[in-house]
Amino acid sequence: MRSLDLTRISPQDVRACQEIASEAGVDVKDCYQCGKCTAGCPLAEGMDLMPREVIRFLQLGAIDVVLDAKTPWICAQCDVCSSRCPQNVDICSVMRAVRQASKRAGKRPVPEADIFDDEFIANVRAHGVSNEQYLAAAFNVKSGHLMQDADNAVRMLTRGMVGVTMHNIEGRAEVAALIDRALAADAARHAARETEGGEA
Ligand code: SF4
Ligand code: SF4
Image 1 (spheres, protein in one colour):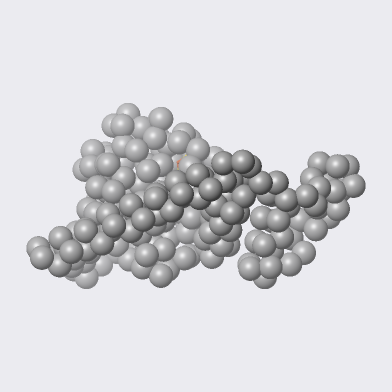
Image 2: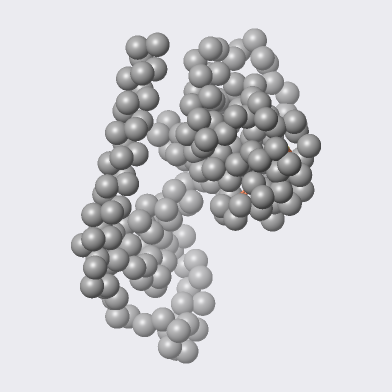
């Protein structure tokens, strides 16, 4: 675990970490650092902070370390960590909340993950379903990885696994309305939190 100068942690940093935990519905004090979450994580090898460390830095109020971490952006939301935790800490939700906070702070430590998320939501919002061939193409253009998976795309097209037809479901307007409602509720919740924080 990296070293940390605790004297640099401000009350605002501690509050920002508490807000992330509360967004995830977690009390990080429940974690006693046993490491079972990390031991079960299928993606730990590619992470810069282990899941256990993300919780530890939140406990310490080290908001910058947490928001700059690639780990929450690499996390596949598989839920293994949460299901293994003897203290019922929902680490999976913490990863999601850190990722949202990191994005709000304009950080995006793994820009590709952010681009993929945005493209996926835009795709589902427009068509009611993900048209994966177009999602992949939009991701490649926006991420600058123009030829990523090009070989696979040709193979999938020639075998008829994907086509060029854009699929739209009948209820796509309802899907778009649901997504808009969720995004608006999220924005309103954060605006209310910021107002509360400013008044505190
Ligand atoms: S499994 Fe639970 S208690 Fe153990 S380190 Fe992970 S979050 Fe903490
Ligand atoms: S939810 Fe994320 S952190 Fe937890 S085990 Fe899965 S990939 Fe690892």
